[in-house]
Image (cartoon, rainbow, N blue to C red; front, side, top):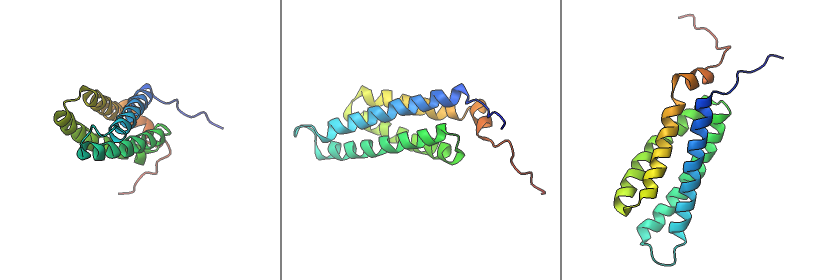
Length: 131
């Protein structure tokens, strides 16, 4: 049996950035949903969105950490969409915590697209094309 390539540090850093962002999203969403009548309905609905996207981001990050290219691409796409939503929500709610989550999401997306991480996702026994 041959030894597999070790996981690059960039993949581990991206995973932990996404994991921290997902935890903060879920906790922030729970705080918005279960506030005692203090938050408007829009913010409660946004809380549900943050809970769902936090769970989805943590799932995608875990699968991307395992080496699956499809989940890496999906996590990056979700990160970009989530960054736009978080920027709008941070402006609307005047919350600095959302900007911290935004930074974590973007750092994870940028780091996982670095050349060292991309080379790790390329299979070593990829078939050559005859074209």
